[in-house]
Length: 564
Image (tube, rainbow, N blue to C red; front, top):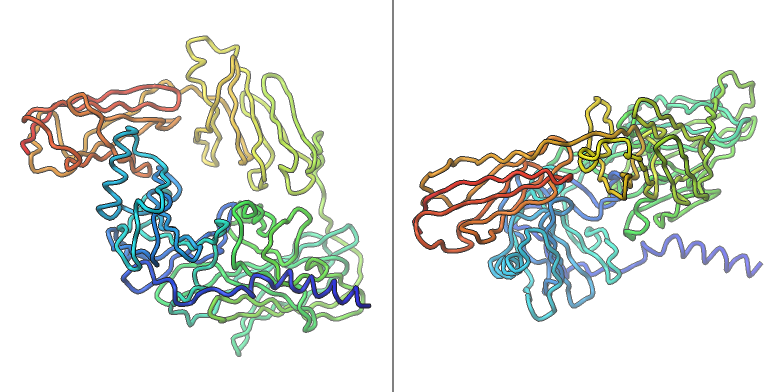
């Protein structure tokens, strides 16, 4: 009995450990000087990952002051075309690191530090790791200006707090206050059926719940009759004061006849585990309906550490003639909550509608290496690429290959290879692999070459084909023309586009010397700041070279006049 007690105590501590951590409440100040309103919460469900911070609105504009949340030093600077764009990492004496992403530019001292190294490297993109004595900052000191760089979908500041292991933690634990008086919304619910003898309302198809709001504001699903092993999932979002966004919830729990059998809470996570979000979310339903269902049960491949309570991994074993009251509660960080009640009557009856499994010649076991060879192509999946065993739908016809269903998530990259030896030698260097979108348009898949073969690595299933990209990128000046006087110009801008494979590299020169062109990849805009260097004389030559991913090259040459 004693051993059982110790085991249960260990399990309880394991699942409740995250919530017991003590975080300093008054160490960090908010990173913006305006009232904080969020467009994204910590742990929010994103494509293949949890959101690692807070997305803070910047009043639909760029250029707001961003300040250091505490004393420390700039320990990392990363500038990239996508991702966080221009990002700053500050390490603090208490062991935490704060992250500031999608910035427009940096404070003058930091900006000068970066530009010096960009010119030495002759590259806009870079990653730097300053020492503790190079760029020290005080609490509340200006470090940058908010922007819309990288993969940002609009002006905002992405803000994180990470521990000494570089794991992100919900910044709300550190005393950051937000106005939030609104309850989360539970917008849909589904019942999943497991096993041939299990059923809901005479069917072992997935069952969509009909949900109604009662007079007291609570949610009630229409009663269902069920038998066997089932699981429940819900689509739940949070609402915050001052914003219309659908944000992520903080906590999701489920009780059966008053006993808690499931609870998860995203307080922190490691970047190594975050891709297992694909086992929490019904990825295929999201692909088909753009609806994110969070499963209140844990599948075999799930390795997430977010669970606080699990009884039978959240699966429900419904027995004949018994009644069950299921309650699923979604909470936000402030404790605002919404509960959905689902009445279930256990009743074993004949199944009328059965789920049929479509069998193909290719049965993939998730824990094995799987490969298909056919004609001039092959596709290979490493072990544990799939989250469950699957009959894989593969077809190759008229130069197009079908790789199952793009709604099925993958944990690892597969390799798709085409033999292009039958192509004329002059075309082989311009052959690319492209994914075929729903609308039939082609999207470049990063293509590598080895002898007479091309290959790509991807986690995205769907339809692929080969294409030839023989068109060089376009370069168009923005708001200036050849031989123009530019004395009153602060910035020189050009727009570049490519028809298929995309921009691989670019280089700008004035009077034969390299210049720093900042590239906004979303808009295709290259920008030079005349304040970077003093020009000698009045007449100057501009040369901009842009190369796409199959090395089609375009060169724009112009002359301009400018008197400093």
